Length: 202
Image (cartoon, rainbow, N blue to C red):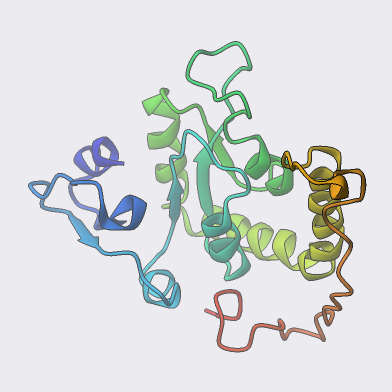
């Protein structure tokens, strides 16, 4: 992120301090403005033209979804090869790449020229419009709120398959039961979290 800011001194970069402001960031780069983690993502998105997600690990990539749902193109990290020592046992950014499905620009983490080319491509208005539309279309077609029920079931199944050790005779019984949570599906263009993180429109 910092190297890209140095490569494009004429562009303004907005950085959110990572890990809830617990990591020091380089304050000396003049075209980066650092802000703390925001409770309302709209504070960030309303100032964002392109979302850079140079993460070495993303289980899903919520910030990418939030940007794309509001028509903001995303440049994100390709997953590491499984044999790469930098990849965690659980992987790297496969979760994010899986749902983005090639609709946005993916770059190798350590291939600086790929990131530069992706940012330069989005300077073209026609290219920007293309990726903006693909971003919104991809996220809008995803049924994430109904998928919550499927994800919840997987978590419950996993908890029952690998229960925490207990010393009572209740160990034979399932430790977790499927809750009867009912989520309302989206209606038209309105997402269920009114005023929440997924409701912003550009």
